[in-house]
Image 1: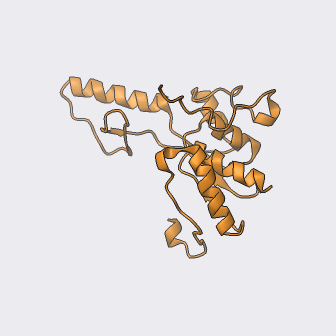
Image 2: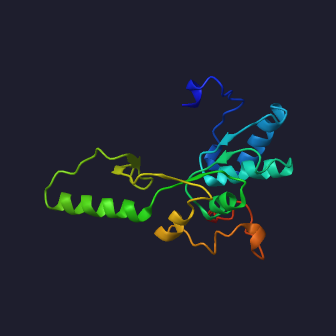
Length: 178
């Protein structure tokens, strides 16, 4: 869609190896410097990468001025949305997905045909295509969708500025096995 919009100039695009938030900081800082800070928006593939971008925008006193998107409605992403440094995250309801999967499993056990016309996602664990709930764009105005669904808790997602101690950026990632 962006490629078909002549008024948008893409100044940089790069995959982040292993989805590593620390590597994303370096990559975005290099892009930001190469563009002389002339970046008007950032599409990040997930909330962790969006947080990395936001850290560089904060360093350059532009956080909240440059629209940054993310995905997954993580604690960090929702904190950034509520703080106004990330304009949107994408939420996919685990409850809706589990309900769709349970219905499909029951139908398959009964020998019934299961429709695969729904939007599809591939599970990491099995690589199998599954029906996926409709993703929801979450902004400050509708963040309660995530809380009411049980996707995250309002208390954990309060912006860092309103809590006594903020988690370190990237603290949501699992610790490596030793």
